[in-house]
Length: 93
Length: 408
Image (cartoon, rainbow over all chains, first blue to last red; front, side, top):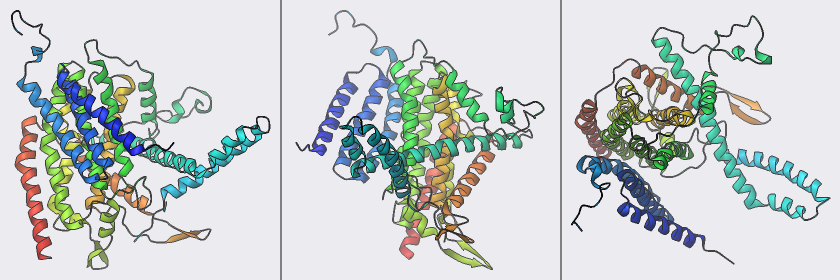
């Protein structure tokens, strides 16, 4: 049976991307969220590579791998670290 | 015009693979006399796709071994010796005769008057034996992912970095961009390492690395953009080929057309300074300022993980020096004075690899010289250098390059 390896690669990358982007949102630790964001962006780049556009792939990595640490710094500076670890208060939703 | 010593790494490795597979095949065929179905395995091993895949694996292995076991160790030794000499001392001098077992432990051999080349190997063995400690409150998964991220992205540089016009794994048309992309992945690893160790020194180091990132990454890319106005290509081999000619003759000496001698000089300066920040050499090593933060973002690593994150800095230094040599200093171009005739094949006595290694080590020696002569800058100073000096200069370099391009 002939396997369409491009399609397989596309589905694997898509699965990584969807799982990664869900983990960005639901993760409570900031550094893990940043890591999953980086992974999501790199897998999006890999899908560009699958479409044979190497230039967009490399620019994606340069731009977003550089942007994620900066985003993370702003995240650290502008949020309270304890905000997620605190138990939910009485009466709040 | 010189010629490479290895005309094509893939073909060289294919000969090697063929020899290895042939030996394995003979063994399998000998066993197949007893177990007949094994004959098919031997035939499969000799088939073309298998040989090609094995050849790729061997080519990658050759480059990794060449970069880490040969050049990384040599570079560490050069740095340790050179800065010791700059500080008016001898540096590492343990010789191989100090090993405590038989062929080495002869009496009346001077044990501490060698060149110390194998000291780094000894340090590596020592680090391998040490315990790998994870801090109790650390984010263990992130803490262990970070060295992998740093090491793999650093090794990825060497997939696209050519050592001569024939000694490379992959010749990408966008090679320079690939190398820059692989370079830019490591700061993410540094940040993750700094945050996940749950230590205030590592955290300060990691956040300094992230703050510094913006100050040098932008001018570096802008300097490359200024260069691309002239080259019209991002292929390292093509860029070096363009520099392999004489710009003008100064008496009997022909000045080569390296891009550092053209209006790209400003870009060359900006790129070199940004590259020093990228490889965390001392004037810009604020993420691991060992006088202020214990060891910066590497404080909590121990054992071979520390060896990896510490030693791979020199690998990044080799890659950075190689990138400067390729972009601005003519790469592997250089005169070949004579050729030897070995079995009908002309072998240059100064092949391209020799010129390239010479340039890499000279640039690295200059970096070592600078970094052990000047004090470390503060975090606000590097932001000032990056935003107020390097970015305007690199924009000026783009303007000059565009002007020369328009005027011809």
